[in-house]
Length: 199
Ligand code: SF4
Image 1 (cartoon, helix red, strand yellow):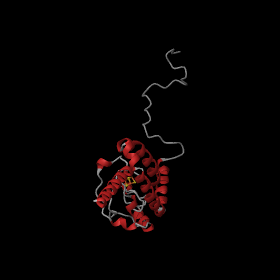
Image 2: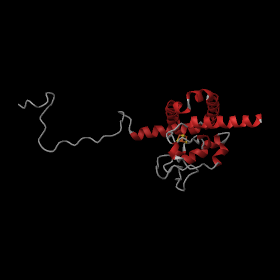
Image 3: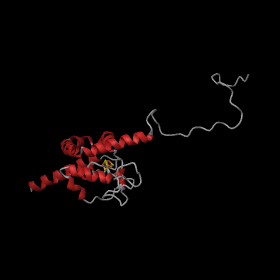
């Protein structure tokens, strides 16, 4: 008997090539296939678009609450607030909209359908390849995010915003909080308006 063999080893391995290691893959919870997880994500995304009117209302109020917190955030420091706010933003918007954290959110102009889920990442409407059933030409099982965007915008009060031309994505803003940026911009605009009226 080979004293160097591990005690827990079972039947001796046949000599020859060592068994190839299984390729390292992303963690895959038992019973939930990647395609099923993907379907679930799309289902939630479509649900959010169906409820675009509610999310529009909610976002308007939410933005006002954030704006009222501007003095506090300013005192803490926008940079220091970035990490925790981004953590929450990623969790909430990732769950509801499959957010990709582009850092320049346009959901309120796109019927609550995130354009960054378009495989071509088009920010101003669909390409010419939408299938007859309204699905994407690149991912045939996925409804085109721009068809969804149009449907979502029809449910919103400010649905006309879908006609606004969006700037190209500024990649330097990726992985930053859109909520904080919008709040800082709104606070700056408000301060400027107040200064104008005071003159
Ligand atoms: S537009 Fe950008 S920030 Fe808004 S949900 Fe899509 S990836 Fe996220």
